[in-house]
Length: 131
Image (tube, rainbow, N blue to C red; front, side):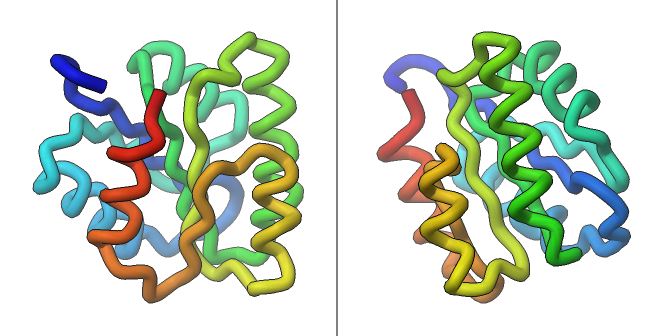
């Protein structure tokens, strides 16, 4: 994306009440030169989709620690399809068991970053893959 800063919406869907990691990731993305909007805790999928539209997001980054990553991601991808927003790249990070990584990729999640992923890895991934 030449000439335009990448816009990333960082969201905490569902009942997960821990957002320290999401805030640290948001700051790392800002430090890397991206525009970042953090939606806060306890967001519904509809709130996340609406925020992505309002903010003209290039990327939606979900932070999920609750174990509900598969159903939340399924619902998000379905809503993005319904709104003709499949051009928005979706990445997810948090507590993601290895057994679920391929399942998430198969549903259209482009980047899956389990806890402990190096910041440079997901920053590079976003830079290289955003449309």
